[in-house]
Image (cartoon, protein in one colour):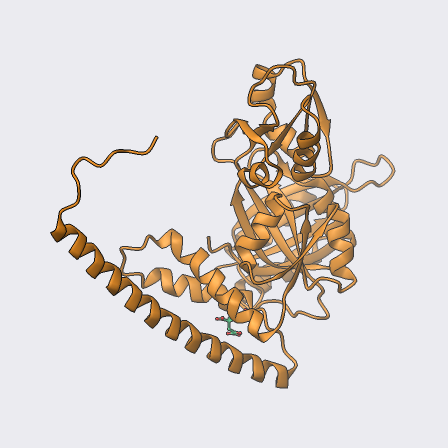
Length: 374
Ligand SMILES: O=C(O)C(=O)C[C@]1(C(=O)O)C=C[C@@H](O)C=C1
C-alpha cells in the first residue's frame, strides 16, 4: 500500500524541488556531453588498435579504470556502485569500436547471463548456449569472442564440467567475475502444496538441499540443463517448482513462493571469461592479478609438498587448490587446479612458475588475468 504523505507539500518545497530537478537536468546534459567526448576518445583508441591489428577488449585497462575511480571517489556515491556504472559506460564505448559477442549458459534469465551482462555491460551481442560444453565449442570455433562459464561456487565448490573442459581445450582465461547467487523457489501457484518435483540445475539443487529437505522432503529433485530451463518447464506445469533468479521469475511469469532459499546466505559463484589464445594475448599485469594453473605430479612420496615449495620460496600466495580425478584407469591420480596471486611479468612469480613447472609431470597455465573488480 502506498504511504500517505504526512503533510501536503508547501509551495516553498515545490519550488525547491523544481529548482533541484532543473539542476539535475543541467548536470545530465553536461554528463551526456562528457560521455560523448569519452566515446569519441574510445573510438580514436579503436582506430589506432585497428591499425595495429590489436584487440579492443582490454580487461586489465578496464580493471585499472574502475580501481582508479573507486580510489578517487569523493562520494556521496557509494564505491560499490562505481564498477557497474563504468562497466556500462565502457560497454557502450567498446561497442563503438567493435561488437563483442559473448557466449554463456542460457536461456534468458540464467546467472551466467547475469554474470556476462554484469561484466561486459549490456552493449554486447548475446550468444546463449544450451550447455557449458557448447559455450566452449562456440568460443573455440570463433562464433563468440568470449565465453563466460561458472568455475566455482562458495557452497558447492568447483564446477566439474568447466574444470574438465579447461584442461582439455585450448581456451584460456582472460578475466574473472563473481556474482551473489540468490535462489528462489518459483512456481505458477503461489504456495508449496502439491509440488511433485523441483526442477533446477544440479548445482542449484545442491546449494538449496537443506531448505528442500526441510520444506519439500517428498518432492522429487529433477536436474535440468539450467535454472532458466527449469523455470521454463515450471511455467508450463503447476506440479513443478523451479529454483532460479529474480530475473527468471519475471522472465517466465512465475511467483516467488519462497525467496532466498540457498543454504548459505553469502552464496557466490565465480565465473571465468574465456577466449582463444591466438586471437587474444594474455592481459598485461594490472597490479592485482591471478594466475590459474592445472598440474599433475608423479605418484611418489613428497610430490605434493614439492609443489608448494617454490611458492613459499618466492613469496607467492596460493588462493585456491582443488583436485579432480585424472581418469587414468582407476590409478587414483589427480589434476590439481591452482590459483596464484600475481602475474608472470613479475619476477618472483616467473621464478616460482619455472620451479613449479620443473617438478610437475603435467603443467598448463589456464590464464593470467586481473582480479574481480566488483
Ligand atoms: O583503453 C582502451 O584500450 C579502450 O579501448 C577504451 C576502453 C574504455 O572505454 O575505457 C574500452 C575498451 C577496452 O576494453 C578498454 C578501455
